[in-house]
Image 1 (cartoon, helix red, strand yellow):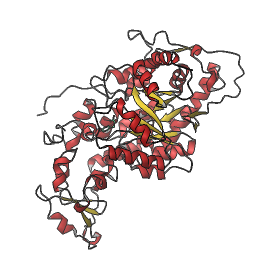
Image 2 (image 1 turned 30 degrees about the vertical axis):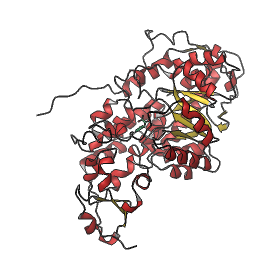
Image 3 (image 1 turned 45 degrees about the horizontal axis):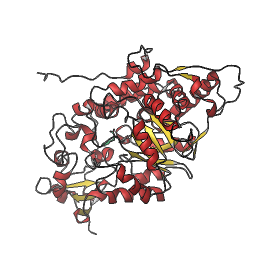
Image 4 (image 1 turned 135 degrees about the horizontal axis):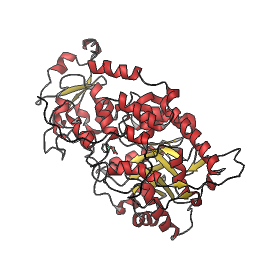
Length: 497
Ligand code: PPY
């Protein structure tokens, strides 16, 4: 195949003929412009040039292969024709480097809130906005933390807690902690290695990672970074095109993924105003994406820009189809009521995650923790409890091992931690994740000793007082670390003159 020169590519720099270079390959994206979920404007900005740097953090590497017909794959760029661009160091780069240099040493990070504070200071504004944002008034994201503070411990004494053991299995897979790394999208916005930071740290420390459908790294890159035998779960956004979903799921199973967590709380993405105010889709302040294309309105933030493939018609009727295409455990992620928990049990899935999507979907939804109490009570009326064939997970707001133990005491099989680990790698890469795991380990050991539980089966409902959990008007102790990292929403600002 003959190579294409940079000069040739640069002649295709308009809406009528738009070529771009990504990872040394030349693509004709002219006909795709109006179908691009993020809008045509952002592609046109790179028309006739190399778009790799902008492309990488927000697309899995195989996105072009999947979405662009092969006849539009023009060929390879002739590297000898590409001017060796010395990347201009901008003021923003210099500022970010200075912030990175000013990070506290890792051994001064004592808790998960510390990672959040460092991430907030070092992340580019758009990345922080996307990760930290939640929907509408962000009441639910704060409630996720507050709910843990409405539960009080009732510790037992004099139990010889010389040795305590918190190892467990999650969906039949060994885990060194009663928690798993929950899926969070677009890891490369936070760190150049993206989700691989999690995979490597998880492999080293026996923790299970749930791979996000919308990872920045490709699924195969992530699986390739795992050590032999390292258990992995997969989070699934169901595509309108079920063939794509089927191939993806079956590929994951062939590659050894153990469980499929189908997201069921996001038929449409919540409005996340911090993200929206960043006008992410235009990629420069004030840029506008054309309205009316692919249902994506201007300035809707990064999440909405890439969510149009998700199928809002997903329903209970689809569950048997999932069962027919895979033997992996199937878990519904985003259950919030006893009614749906019972339906999930009756549908024959292997578990549910009581989640409100980190407060990013329906605002003023209750916390997973609060729902846990009602859901466990309902499940107890339908068979053995705990049910070895039906796991109940909780996520949202977990920052401390005490949070984990409260959820376990109330009947959770394990908990998911998403943002906690996301902020750990955004601030310190893989080492940050390892430190976060170590912190959870230290805290869990101490808390189990102080609680009088020698193993996780001794963490029982009697060890917590959840009487205030359902009261949303109760006075909770101030969560001062969280309150310092939480960034309040802001109103529209007048134009600066
Ligand atoms: C989220 O941002 O909450 C996600 O779950 C990831 C995502 C990102 C973009 C589109 C849909 C979902």
